[in-house]
Image (tube, rainbow over all chains, first blue to last red; front, side, top):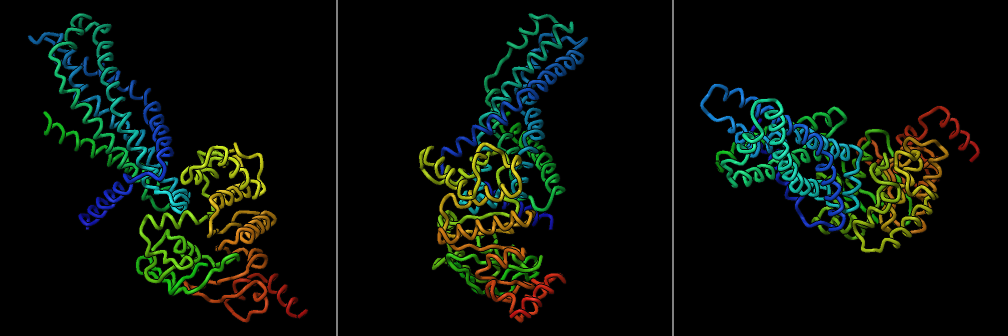
Length: 248
Length: 254
């Protein structure tokens, strides 16, 4: 029974995606909606992403300084470790887990609320492809702005590491900068952007799915919003593992 | 004209509609009435294609609604306007943007042409100077009127209204009823109204279908309501002692 239900949900998810990525009724309307979503997802998440990124970098720096204490490994490695761990793992994963909470729950609640208030029915009757109009702009907007947010998070994390390590007296300015500039592998940036794009797709499409098919009242809407975050987080971590296996 | 042919609909094995065959005429206000749970909303949603029937057909003139592919269905739906029970206005848009939405989505009119059309529709429903207000800043009656303006902005051939008077005071209900009736006559459209408002039945009921337990229990018009010998209709219409007394008085006068 659980397997059958899972397959049903999976099938409905892919049918929704198929409907969502069909030809727009009017390009200008979709473009406007995509811009609005970019603003909501991107600009609306800037502060939280930066705050989290500062602490990710700071904590990484402090903890690696603690690990390296008394070892023969040079301290400038802290800069190198902060840079690579944030670029490959922490910036895309933590940022997207946080965005699944912030943006994902928002998307599920917004679309679910529209379903409950008959807005979606109203659009359907007008002849609008609601899956496309409500979901495609969100996914496209996320695919564009979330990699930018992740890149920003990686950059801010390195600064966070600096703020914790240098003024905190763990190491000198020149050691940290030397570490950040050492052993740079360009491919890691590609992995970061691949992860960011995959996670962006997961968190927007899964949240949209949860909202689009919501039935019932406010309790169900709350559940849909929670499910959006929980399922997005699990799938992001699963995808993180798969990308790590495939690309590293 | 809209015609239904032996329409059945079940949910989880429970049959809600049991073979509805009826007609809704062009240029007339067609009413679907019945108690709560009689299947009115299900029938309306089947008529607009939001639900698919278990069996049976719905004809829009000579087009079978359920035989259409997605593109054809979308084309038909562009000829359909619908007023929802809760108005279903988009909260994040102003009144003007709400009414303009179908024009933005489906036409290539210039900004001025769209604005003229929006203003015409708002004037038609006696709403002026509210273009920049948000739905939350307007009353229930105004929201219904904005809903009507939005549903007629593309010049539909078919208009559906789900409980247009719910939550409105009697006087505003009469205004909304008269508005729907005048628009129906003026634009010669097929209007189907789902209601259990007795005022609407007696004021604008040109073709009335009474649903009871998922079946048609009575059909007629407002002038036949008072004299009908259908027990189901009597139970429904004259539910209160006051209305029963009123009916007796009317019959005595006859």
